[in-house]
Length: 231
Length: 231
Figure 1 (cartoon, one colour):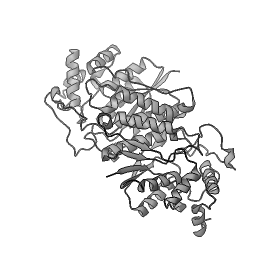
Figure 2: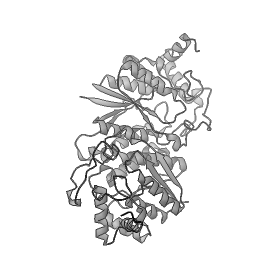
Figure 3: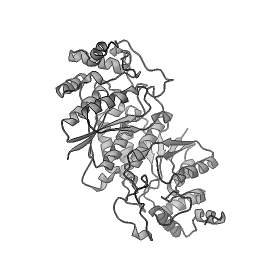
Figure 4: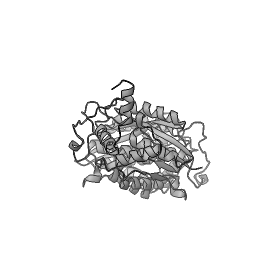
């Protein structure tokens, strides 16, 4: 049986990756990390969606506040705010969490090995957020290599694959892909401040806004929040 | 200032690595993982030694029982026992913890990045325990590459190094190295059953015993336990 584990945070990219995997594998396990993020609300939103899809969901705890070094973990560090998406600076942002995706892929690889799953899917992409080093295709390839050298795969012919199908896609293209797969984006959240209602000032909200503009649609999250009287 | 983080479990190899690093760097931080291991006693022994050395000690929590797949984590799985070291089977043993060292190196790399440290030292070695995939030099190199592609090192000239100075040494050679560096092995422990008093049946105890025989010395741990009337 073709199985995969999907890194699933509840945002646009990983939700699309989850639907992409559901379309491709017979068995899909969603893996969400509770890592001490400010925007912990993404976990409960992720749980809602997975429940709707009736697939296994693993929430793994790894407290990256023990390490720190990111405004996404430390509430004493200010989150960068902007008026327009063009204002987002060059360089690795303060919201970068040191080697977060390396840690997540290592834990996912361990789970995959323990459960006999050989494929790990993630929604990493770089075109709209080129300043995060741990979402690039060369990193994904290097992690795959390390996993195949440091697990039982090293002494077996069955290698582990990490699939990042959207790595060279813009967020708006990912959304288009997702819409074609039937993704309901009204329950995906992106805001770094951790509220269901988008701040529209953090880079994550602004990039999401820009992507929906490019798709030429209203963000279903905004639509839902308005309908529920929350906006 | 030359700084390093040392993966330090309190066993023979990593204790020697700690002394090796103290001899080489101006600042050394010992990093111990509380990962749900049976032999949790290694953490308190590690703490004792680090206190004696008056160096910073970070104990990081990452519960690998969430993942399982190892007799070192799951007390319902029997630990393999042997009469002689020659009985230890070929193949990846049940005490292998899925991608443990990949997870540890990822977390160490994140800590190193958050603290501005560029070198990570570990006591991995393969000659006496060739069946663990996550201690081999090709794995260490591949992890180093993944870390340099998935952290700020990807956009900087300052690369992270993982040093495994004993990777091609027998345990008895590591002990000789350690003795030359002044290591007190009477407070290092190895037993997988997690007691201070070695079971002398698990592969870890048997390999330790064999190494001290090769060094032609009495294991200082046994000497101390006898002196304290515990054996």
